[in-house]
Length: 480
Ligand SMILES: Cc1cc2nc3c(=O)[nH]c(=O)nc-3n(C[C@H](O)[C@H](O)[C@H](O)COP(=O)(O)OP(=O)(O)OC[C@H]3O[C@@H](n4cnc5c(N)ncnc54)[C@H](O)[C@@H]3O)c2cc1C
Ligand code: FES
Ligand code: FES
Image (cartoon, rainbow, N blue to C red):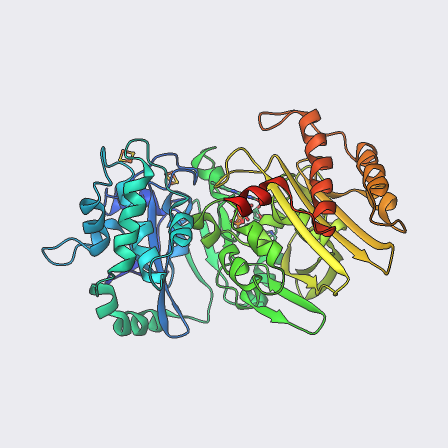
């Protein structure tokens, strides 16, 4: 059985199809049709709702795409939809800000924007345009234009009013804490089951006994099988409450990130230690997706255009894998075996990702090139780490996504760099070596020739940065 708060009402569900998305649950079973379906694939934000959970004794509200959220993911959470925002006979301050700014026309996207504004207001310390744009980047509007919506965000952040949620915060925290259970919970019907282990011991033994089960971390990729391919997944194991998979540990030599840590947390926590990684996570999908999607899910997904793998390859990351009681450590470059094929054994899962700490002589940079700045998949993703001795390059880890059937290091390019000075001649040799490393494909995102040119240009950009020269885009930013 799962338990959650729908606003302030306690809901229990046990015999419900595990393939039900929260969007369909709200609209079809709860008569809450304020939450809209635009794309059912995480791209438009019309289905945005807020999930509340207790973090360090306080409520934290985050936006998620309800079209990609399995009903089981509500266990132990507070679900807030647009219907919950009204404050007695008044609109909520974020709704009023939308009205004041004339920020809605046909209104189809409006509930989604309102929920993104609600979470922005709850999490902001005042008006910050960049923060607002980031919070709204996962919501599309076809008619109003974004200027009035950003204006509504400004009003909402500058004048945050106390609301029913802040007034009930202590009570909500206590009610959610009372829902916590150490035992495995589940929902089950004759044709589907969704189990929620709370520890690695529970997870490992259940998965070993049922290796045919499908692991669900954030579900941002997996749920597309339900919403786009109309598949019915008979047995799912949720990872989001497995305690060890949510841990973040720093040792003197490494950062060890639990596989189920959401990407938005990774973005925040890596800001100080690996700022280039954190900056690139800002370009990863949208806020709604990053709030659910995990680092482990991004790796296990084994997409050739996944954003994290090239960065983790360039940072020499390893995976800690678990099967039953057995743990093993595998260098990431041995994990990807072929197109969407990995070294995971039946019943084995990624427990954590270990990032060695950088030394002062190492320089890590990464770039994502996609058609849109926000919420888009990479055409090419490049990540570079050079280790520099006094006059020569002593180590090179050059990795790309979008250039082969798996995210891969560029062995010939690395060989062309090691033992050489950081000079234009070395750079050009390394660029030519990329042609031995990759024969990229042409597809809807980019042609093969363009991908190869891009890979070389990104390596050139990296060299320019190491030499203290600004790239054209940075000059433009500096001048403006
Ligand atoms: C709109 C949209 C935009 C996106 N944009 C991007 C983007 O910009 N960049 C990008 O790289 N990706 C993007 N994605 C893809 C997806 O969001 C990411 O790959 C995400 O990191 C997947 O993580 P998850 O936790 O949601 O994985 P899930 O969907 O839960 O799982 C993905 C796969 O990994 C398996 N799995 C999950 N965790 C583990 C584990 N610990 N051990 C073993 N197997 C596991 C699951 O069984 C499943 O097969 C996007 C997806 C959508 C819908
Ligand atoms: S319906 Fe478009 S993101 Fe969910
Ligand atoms: S108001 Fe029509 S889609 Fe935004």
